[in-house]
Image 1 (tube, helix red, strand yellow):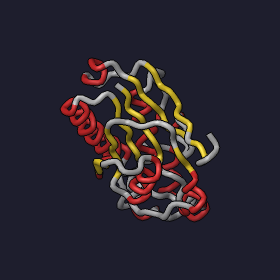
Image 2 (image 1 turned 180 degrees about the vertical axis):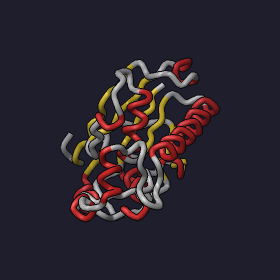
Image 3 (image 1 turned 90 degrees about the vertical axis):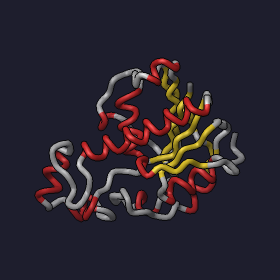
Length: 199
């Protein structure tokens, strides 16, 4: 069983290093050149436009299952702000030092975020088994992918250790019983994305 995780393309807010959670931002014009040489049997996506538009570019003419549970963490009042904007804020400094114990104002705690992502993952697994497919792709956000890798990658690494770039995805390869029981995958492969016309 293959479950591939892809981060949305680079957005205008990503370029200026702003916090981008439940707010949305248009994809950068240069990101339109990204393509992939693989296909999957089912496609799941966060319902935010940056993920839907990325999915439409990578996998045109496919049906998307949209899941709100696959959204990025909600950064509340810090949405659209940058480190430079917030660095003098005491709560922000506390959150950077201990993001599990602190929470953005009007945003999600780390616990709320991870529980929501787990609910979305459970829906994906239920659909995979109900439809008896061997592969699916999930187009989502950096934080969601970090959490899923920390939970299911073969090598156990902390959430913050994972570097999730826009130019590659990850394939988690499970045996069916491990997937059903919520165990770690047996193999993790990187999937490079390429510029159209270059390979």
